[in-house]
Length: 193
Ligand SMILES: Cc1cc2nc3c(=O)[nH]c(=O)nc-3n(C[C@H](O)[C@H](O)[C@H](O)COP(=O)(O)O)c2cc1C
Image (cartoon, rainbow, N blue to C red; front, top):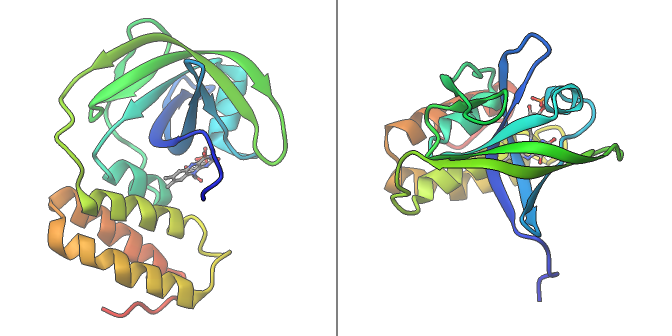
């Protein structure tokens, strides 16, 4: 049986830079006793931003272009000002949570910031699961590990994920998928088109 673990939610965390600009990155976060744990690698922009500005936003979005975009140099998504903290949330968010960081563990290689909920807002309904969206998230994770995985492993995984893309993708998913496939090919990996 699988090891019992805290469930991980793939979200977009928006932090604030020293220049007061929003910075959005995909993160796998955990909810423990009503608090959220965010674990950015060191070094990273999210880590630096959270260290100097102890507030941030969790965005729940089904626009997977934001996930694929952050791995392919497309980070300029429209944002709005938060209600209760000095921060920003994504316009595409179905819902967002505003957090105040109450604890910080500077562990290596991943730090851990514990956030307390200050405010939550829902903007649009969740319309159900879409397999192509999950496929894009999986491909984004693969793309973030290009240097660590074998070419054969990447080819096999992409071949399987392509089935969901071909059967269930809409425009956003196709666009996000295209960005990731370009990045994989640019890394010198030949995919079976
Ligand atoms: C689904 C998904 C989950 C991720 N979760 C994490 C995470 O929990 N911690 C982390 O440091 N990076 C995570 N990453 C990678 C970062 O989003 C990416 O490397 C990002 O650019 C972080 O570095 P930055 O803050 O300097 O941009 C994840 C990527 C994806 C696609």
